[in-house]
Amino acid sequence: MVRVVQKVSSSRAFAKVAPRVIPALDRTVHRLTGGRVLPAASLLPGVVLTATGARSGLPRRTPLACMPEDGGTWVLVGSNFGRPGEPAWTGNLLAHPEASISWRGREIPVRAQLLEGAEREAAWAAVLAFWPPYGTYQARVERRIRLFRLTPREHPGARPANQTVKGPSDRQ
View 1 (cartoon, rainbow, N blue to C red):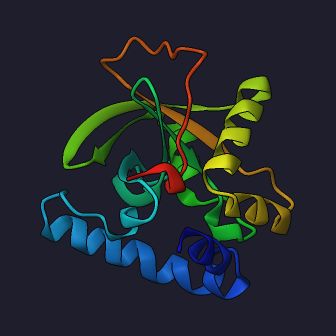
View 2 (view 1 turned 60 degrees about the vertical axis):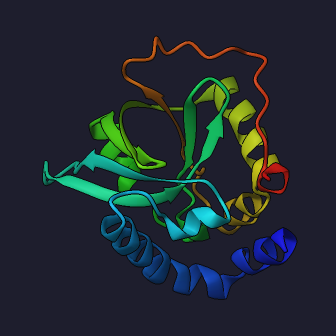
View 3 (view 1 turned 90 degrees about the vertical axis):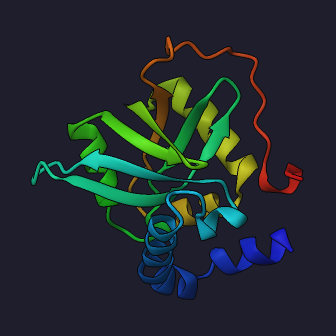
């Protein structure tokens, strides 16, 4: 089943329809269930990111797939479903890295870090192992897809180097 969904999510038709449908559905259900349910998270883990708008200064809520890491951090992938432009939330985090996420019904203050260099390369390899369609998205666009690591603000920020990340097919 996971392979079928990966194939569908890699299609250009999905890239056209999904950005309009999935976030709206996720936002609505998340709000109605008090943050307990995020429909897209039934396939991939997901958060609702609340970041300050880069231009408006207003809070912006965006449901996003994420890759949870051992040690209590998350990686967000600015894939924009393989479409050319950067997703707005990535610009928001660059301008205002202090944000919060709703994760499994809990609101968690986080600090976002744009990953670069060797740290980005290691995270990208883990992201591709976790959800291979991200590779298809990258192949479709000329920009380098941004990766952010979210660290809880009350967390010291250190992440053990020997962490393992489980993909969707490893989940029970």
